[in-house]
Image: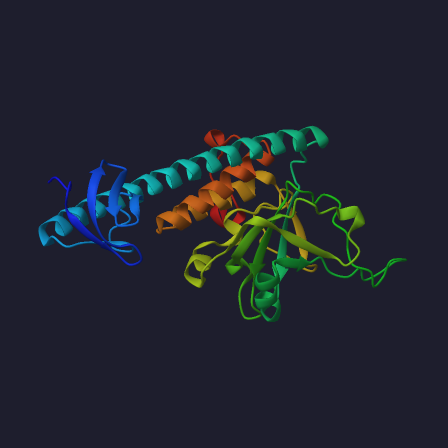
Length: 287
């Protein structure tokens, strides 16, 4: 439809006549002179067409342009998100490469803790775990320092209630250690979690993740005894097996993708080939 010579009304300039327009601009002649407006955006807020058919025509053009802009904005957001994701992957690889050069991977740099029921809420709210107190010797009463815990380490949280058999000990969650944690400088005995890689299992998931499916005392492979103490060191591959099995538990795609990313990050940090990772061979499986 041609808009040339159509009558319009402006809130300030009064009545006018369209003298020229294209896909981007419209020019209107008013008693005060010719004014230029953005097309079709000016119609509605500033200009009103007297011709109902012309007004409907411009409205449809405006709706079409609005839809195009929205689609362009969504495409731009997707491209930016993809760029950010690729950039993060690149930076993660760079950071991991630098960290690998900084220290030698210890095959048993992972940690498992026996959490008590009364502290579970605070552990997952604050995302940190207490190493415990030294009970004898010159440093009696001081917090323990776990020398093998470093930024490539994961902390496994487990629970066995007093009325449970040891073989029923279940995994509550797992987190990577905060990148800035230094065991030698740790004064308060708390190991803080990584800002991104931290995971709490639901009660139903926890019941399916029995600790002794993965852990084995190599001197006494058929024994499932914790005895005393709050902490044990774990083989790196055992934690990788646990994370891999948690991936399999997840049914919500977003949750599954997150644990998969966690699993890949852990394996990269500890130089574990995911394709060659053996299945669990814990004491419970061989009993």
